Length: 313
Image (tube, rainbow, N blue to C red):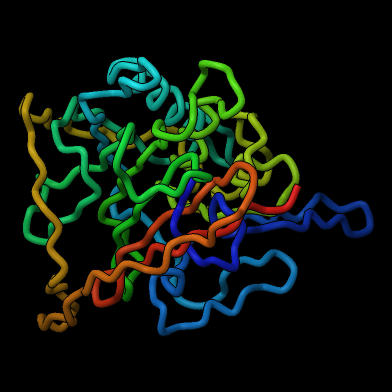
């Protein structure tokens, strides 16, 4: 699982650890939320010394509790997985996250499926509005993925406010087999559920047993640390938002990436545009399975592709 983040961090999402028990009290959780410093190479994140969570900038969040997604229509020919089969795994994964128990109900967000999409590219266009899509796609051949990465999530957000606008997820079917067995095989549900955690705003955790841990374990279920994190992002509610589904055209194409965005601010002016710049590729020679964290594109900032190394077993 891959999320382009800071190369200091372990591979899944910004790392977090330390379940501390004080005098028999309930354990404190060490989940990490994605912060804007992780998209901006001019800012030091100043990691917490215990959890390794970033401490600078604002936390990334969705401005609406209604989150759409689209499935790339080709599926994986390499692994013989259709778009409809991927859709079932994705829907089950969202259900896994939205049905956990928070103090006051379940996390207050809903997702809706816009259908299949022809576009098979990571992109975000500042001028395209609702034509942008959170695309989940297999990559059987050419992609940004290194061969040790299972998947890569690219997040687009506002550097000033942290609001998330778009997340695209690439699944590395070029170098890995999903649910087909063999030496380089991984469980698709585990990979998808981890990447959806990134999509929702969680970074890597160092907590043992966490789904958002930076090393692949094979478990698809969120642990207590993951549940605490998602309930922090989306506080529990007795009911989820009701969303209007706007299906895509059958041959919905790419809208293209545009890296000069004007972002309205409170006084009616606009902040600066965003520039797109690819960060350095991951170091070669790393062995084992890499769960990457999200590549982040910030408005009024730079798009970085910083891949974390796999956490040592």
